[in-house]
Image (tube, rainbow, N blue to C red; front, side, top):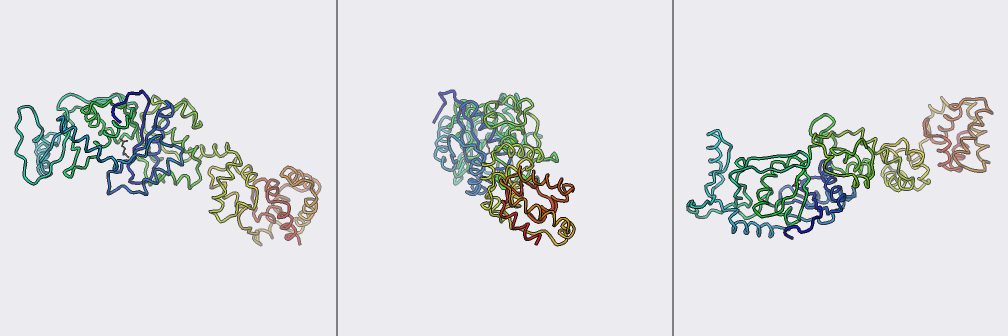
Length: 471
Ligand code: GLU
C-alpha cells in the first residue's frame, strides 16, 4: 500500500473507541459512507485505538454495532491502529533517515522552560528548535541516559493551505506550527502521525471529519508532503448543536445511536434524519438511502452548525413507520412486545400494525399499542363499568353478542357495519354502544376503531368477554 495509482474515491471513518458511536460520529460516518457510495468508491473503517488508557473493546463493539444497525458496512477494515505499530515505526525510521524528522533530547522540563521564555517575550509558546538539524549547525552533545523523542521537521516559512470541501480556503502560517513530536521516548507514534501514515497507506482521497480536527490538518498536510504522499481533500463538518443551541451532548440524550434503536427508531429514519444535519438536496426532507447515495455531494454540505431536533426526528420516523409494510413492522415490533411482557403470538400482528401505524412515531409506541391484544387482560374497573354499563347498555350488548355470534364473516368492515346498523335499531348514538363494548371486551374506554379491534381480537375472545359481562 503506497501511493495511489487509481482515481477511485476512497473515504474513511476513523473513530477513537473511547465511547459509543454517538450521533455526531454517526453523521461523520454517514457522509463519508455516502460520498464513497455515490462515487462507487471505497469506504474504509479505521479504529484509532492508540489511546490505550481510554480505548475499550466494548467501545469498538458499540461502534461496529452502530454502523451495522445503520447499514454502513465498510468495504475495507476495520483496521486497528494498534496492529499497525510496526508500520508507523518503519515510517519514522524512514523520515529520520531522509532528514524530515530528527531526534530531540530536550527534556519535558526544558521544553516547558522554552515555552515559558517565548510566552514571556510575548510570542507563541513553542519548542525552540535546539535539536533541529540545519546545514552548518552544530547540535548539542547528546545527554547520557536520556531517550529522545522524534520531532517532525516542520517547514519554518510559508503557509500551509487547503481548500476545505466545506469551509473553503484555509491557510495557516507554518511559523505557527511547532515541530510536532511524532514518536515518544519509548518509540510509540503519536496521534497525528498515525493518522497521516494511515491516510497515506489506505490511499484516502477524501477526509470528512469533525471541525475539531481543523487544527490538525496543516500538521498532517506537512507530514504528508514530507513523505511525498498525495494529499487527500479535507472537509471539516461543523458540529451539531442541541435543541438549546449548546453543543450536542449526553445531556440532550445523545448517548449512543443504539439508544435510538432501543427507543424504536428505524435505521432508515435515522439515516434520513442524520443526513439532513448539515447536508441538503433542495427542499427534500424525506429520501431513501438510495436517493441519498444518488444525490450526495460535498457541495451541499453546509458551513453552519446543524441543530438536533427531536420533534423532526419523530416526524421522519413516523413517515418511515407509515411506509413500512405490515409484515416488516410485525417482525420488528414482536420482540418489543415481548420486552413489555406481552405475547406477540396471540394475534396476527399484521392487522395490528395496519391499525396503529398511521399514528405511531416509534416502534415502541406500536408495541405499546399492540399490548391491547398481546398483554394480559385487565378488566375495566368496577367504577368505569358502573358509570358506562348500565341495564340499558347491557341489553344493547346482549343484542350485539347475539348478532355478532352469527356474522358470516369476522372482519373490521363487517363489524363496523353491524355497529352502525345497531345504532339505528336501538336509536342510540355511537358512544352509547362503543364505550360499553370497548370496556367489556378490552377493559379500556378508548381504543382505536372498535370494529378493527374486535376483528383482531377474534370472535371467540370477544364473545367470551361479552358473555361474561352481560351474565
Ligand atoms: N479519531 C478521530 C476522532 O474520533 C478522528 C480522526 C480523523 O478523522 O482524522 O475524533
